[in-house]
Structures are given as structure tokens and as C-alpha cells.
Image (cartoon, rainbow, N blue to C red):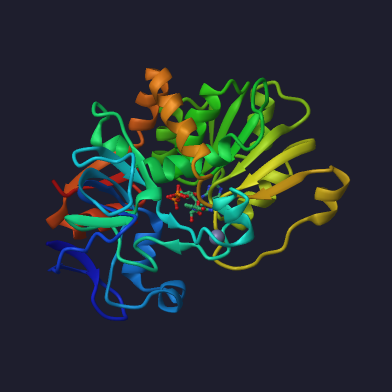
Length: 345
Ligand code: NAD
Ligand code: ZN
């Protein structure tokens, strides 16, 4: 089969022929139809310090995907050949304290599909059957391919109740844009999104943000004034990984505000802890998706709201055939895009 592989340590990837993965007991094998490009894949291609310290080549990368079940391993129930499905990319151990308590998203032994084990940028992928999320037959395959980042957005956006609340989202990457659509759907009062890219802020606006702020030229305090806000944002969703975005967020929160942090910073950075303490701000780190409550909520929200489904689909701006992967990576790296999809069908 075809697979996009890190064949040796160092920058670059190769589309090569490799043996099909074997479907063992408790596993399912899928024919990949669509796959989404994530920032992680760009890091792996570029071979930065994180990639070099994490990956053992050869490795098939890719973890956002949608496909069709072609084989069901021994001891697997509730899945049939022909089922359409997405997959959770975090493979958990099932044995640690958190797993056994049902808190699989905080497993201490998480293995990343397409990072620590062969992934989904290939004609076929094998995953534990417990990682499968069956999808309705009618789902748009492109939408099915972005349930992983949609799950990051959902997990973060619904971390705190947002009904009637003023929400600030820092970062209008694909995940920030989807989070804007979700908090809008969930009943937020004002939804403000910041970024440094007008292109990306345009995507956030189209997905339902009330106000988009280019922090290269405008302060979030000005946005508050424009909206007639007097006390600061109640909820902050950090989706940029930029230290300056966190500083700007903290400066614009109400006392008692709640912050969910998804964006991954490159390095440790200082924070105004005095402000956090005296304003009694709650800050919570968010990793991955809750297995499988986040998945349930994604499916049920999309099934009940065509407005939300359209807003989420609008984040997909580019589609490439798998053999044009290099162009897809260049597009994703340019930042002049939302979500980029690879078509493996
Ligand atoms: P992305 O890199 O496409 O988007 C980040 C956006 O932040 C970019 O559009 C960038 O222009 C913007 N930005 C940069 N500096 C900013 C600033 N000072 N203020 C406001 N915006 C600024 O990433 P994405 O795929 O949308 O993911 C969002 C973040 O979440 C990334 O940091 C990613 O690494 C992280 N992430 C975390 C998890 C997790 O499980 N915690 C999972 C997936 C992604
Ligand atoms: Zn575990």
C-alpha cells in the first residue's frame, strides 16, 4: 500500500510502498478515505527538536482520518466490515489509575497514532477497536476526517458553561475557528477571536465570531469597548500557544474568569501570577479529547444543527490528492489556509 513515511531521522517525508498493517485481536483495519493535516505533521516533516526526541523512524505519520472498516479482529464486537468511522488518535493503556477510573484522556501511558506508532497517512490503518468512532453513512468524509481537531475544539470550548457568557478565543487556527462555532452554538453572549492573520480571522468571522481582533494592530480592550463590555471576558480559550496571547488574555478577563488552555507553547514562559491570584482566575490545561464523551457531543451537536455542521465544514479550505502531499504540506505551512485535507480514496 501507499504510505507517507518518515523513512529516516531528519527533515522530509516519502510517499512509498509498504506492507499493509496486520489486524490483530481487538483491532480493526480501515481503508483510509480522507485524512487531515495537523501542526504535529508539520513538526514531524520539518524534524524539529520535539520530533527528533519523539520519533523513531521508519514511521507512517498522520492521525486525523476517516475511512471504511475492511477487517475486524478477533474478540471485537459492535463493529462490522463496511462501517464508516473516524478514529481517536490517542491509544491508552487501560491499566493505569486514570484509565481504570474511566478517565482515559489522562492516561499516563498514552501512545500517539502517527507519532509513536504507524498512523493514517496511508491506504490502510489499524487501530484498537476501542478507538473507533462509528459515523453515520451520510457524513461528509471531509468532516469525518477532522473529528480529532474538532474534538480538541469541543473539549476546550465546553470545558466551562458558556451560556450567556462573554468568550475570548486567542488563536484562529482551525481549532480556534471551530471553537468559535461551538461556543456560538452553545449559547455564548459575545464571541471574540484574536489572531495575527486577517485571513484566519476571516474564517473565524464566517464560523460565527462576533468580533475578530488582529492583535498586530488592535488591542482586545478596544474590542471590549466596541461591544459595550464593561467587566471583562468570563471565559478564555487559549488556542494559539503564543505567550503574548496569554498575557493579552489575562489583561482582559473578569474577576473569577475561567480559562481552558489548549495551545502548546514552544518553551516555558512567565505569567502574571499576581493577576491570576487576585482575580481568582481558574486555569485548566486541556489535552486531546475525552474518550468518548467529547466524541458523543461532537456527533450529537452536528446531528442536531446544520448551522453548526456548515460552520465546522467551512474551516476546511484546501483538499489535495494524497500524491500531492508536498503541496498540501506547503499550503498548511503557509498559514493562508484553514484545515487541509488529503484524499486517499
Ligand atoms: P495553528 O498553529 O494553525 O493556529 C494557531 C494560531 O494562533 C495561528 O493562526 C496564529 O497566527 C495564531 N497566533 C499566533 N500568535 C498569536 C497571538 N499573539 N495572539 C493570537 N493568535 C496568535 O494551530 P491549531 O491547529 O488551530 O491548534 C491550536 C493550538 O492548539 C496549537 O498551539 C496546537 O499546537 C495546539 N494543540 C493542542 C492540542 C492539545 O491536545 N492540547 C491538540 C491539538 C493542537
Ligand atoms: Zn492508562
